[in-house]
Length: 368
Image 1 (cartoon, rainbow, N blue to C red):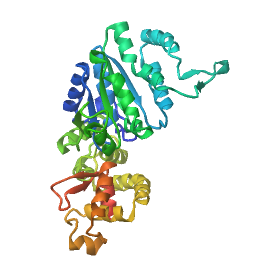
Image 2 (image 1 turned 180 degrees about the horizontal axis):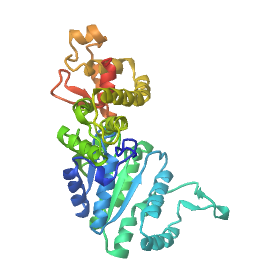
Image 3 (image 1 turned 90 degrees about the horizontal axis):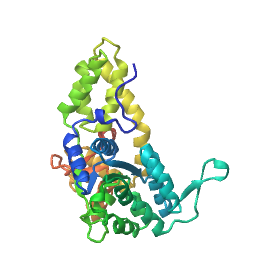
Image 4 (image 1 turned 45 degrees about the vertical axis):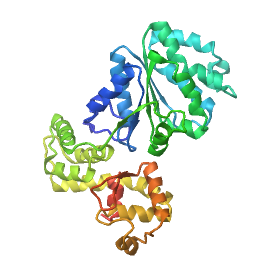
């Protein structure tokens, strides 16, 4: 049987682990017309939770739309992405209405000659984007149903132009009960700045919902249940798996997948199976880790090496002697950048006060 552990893409709502409180908060707020921002490190399940929130809200009668802005580089891209999301996700009755409506808005995506493919208009004005952002009001007028809109990778909007979030807010703040919004993004620094800095248009416009590491007991139950369902037993490998994963959702599923592959139906995992699974999972992650390491500056590498060794304080003699870490303001700048892109989080249980989010990266830096 194929492995039940999904680690390369968002998981289905039934495969979420220990996110019931966060899910309820997102859905309740959205159905009340209030906005939320979903924050957490990369690969902690933000997109999976967005989709679960959408599915739950839809069962409660809302019209749900998810728009992913990753890869957008212009306002025209943004408008097109919104337009395509509605076209793909509305149910058939609303889709027929939408097909007519969008043609009155001079759509950014139109049928190509001969009906094959699509052709983009050369430019999209702010008015065109506002028309697409106004679609929840149109849906409410048409159906009386509230929309729940998930904007994923929302930091891309900021990167396109610093004034573009203001275009969003100009329309979104008029929606009232017509829509509740969930914002998410994989760049923690930009997302935090956008919603927490008074200089930005979205300051205080969305309450934070934070995803942290998964509790070991919840992970253990999830993994054991899926092994048992296929007549397999994670056995004595389960404890080391939980230790290595450190609550990281994607790394836990990656390890569980490779352990599952080592155990035959009716079998029980032992230390040999665990060793093979651990080695396979680490090999699969090596390319990603090495690519990240190549992108780091010399100072960032020294910072990461120091933090990976959790008993070594920053700025002390040991950090300078072992890793060449200077005592200067530039070290703090490097830390802030690594935090902003999601590779470090604060942790008062370590001597440095920081923790590397990816346990595989931390182990690799320690030479384990």
